Amino acid sequence: MRDEFLHYQNLWLESSVCISLRGTISSLKREQSYVPIDNIVCLALGSLQNTKEVCRAASLTQLAALMTVIEELGKAYS
Image (cartoon, rainbow, N blue to C red; front, side, top):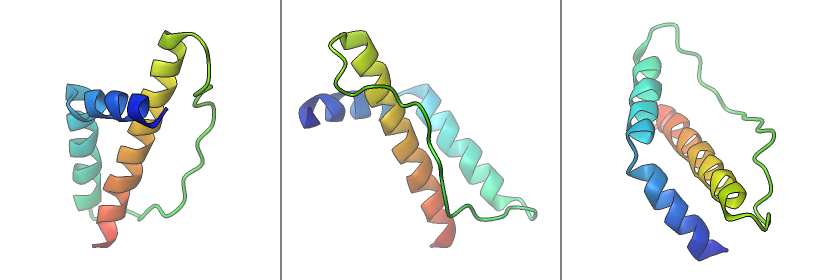
């Protein structure tokens, strides 16, 4: 499953949506009114073990997106 996740993570990281998300978070962090976020609750990523590839792909991509959000928010403290 790790190899499959890395595949979808790489697709995500190279996507225009990921680049846009990173830019949006970076822009928000530069605002004077920015309040650091130190806790995230994520619901409904889906099943990473679903037998349908399209469902698994969506879930793995959503996990990669969540990891990007966490990474970008973490940069606020550096």
